[in-house]
Length: 70
Image (tube, rainbow, N blue to C red; front, side):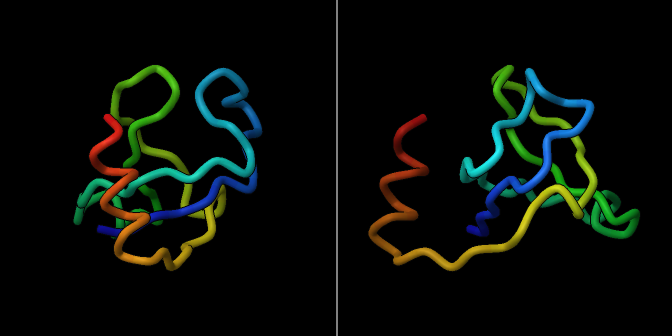
């Protein structure tokens, strides 16, 4: 499980929240195109530019809480 924090929601104000943590969904093709797949505020998974996010390290207990909260 990998997580990122949103640092830019330009052109996606309704879909992304700045300073919110998002879980990355694995997508090899997206990664090759400098994109990242996440479940956004609509509840659906979409691709966004990597530059909109920063990777973060979370304690295992926090990861478990975030992934079970869905």
